[in-house]
Image (cartoon, rainbow, N blue to C red):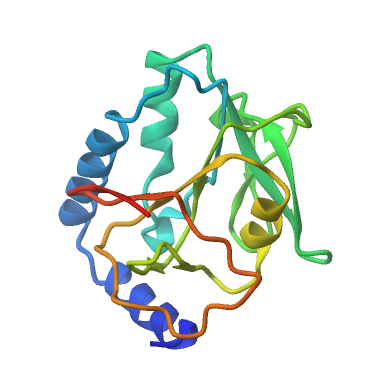
Length: 186
């Protein structure tokens, strides 16, 4: 399947989820996430989910990390849609977040992070058995991931599709993907 078709289908599938099912899938994702080894992790970059699009609820992960691993620095992105690049900011709480013109929550006062990042939680609409993902198509994360040496973990409410047919040299492969039922290693 091509990314454009995958995007349409994945968005449709997510938006069809009723609230109870969506909540259950997110709880199961969190339970899988909790099994990761955080002993060597000092910083985690986590996208801020758009719950209206029924993206995996990363706020559950952030809340769990804040409570159980307060020593881990949480980094969140801010997108520049003119340059298609992101800046990365220390997460200081919900009260610091504000929706941009695309209805994406972004940090307003969180300190700019310029150090190492150990692990990146990557957004996606779908992923394949080879570890490639279909995102929203703007390339923000592929550009970001090219320049860092961090573990790359996708989050998906659904299992892998067989194959994304139009993967190119700019697509960055995930190391793992967490689903409600498994953590898949690539």
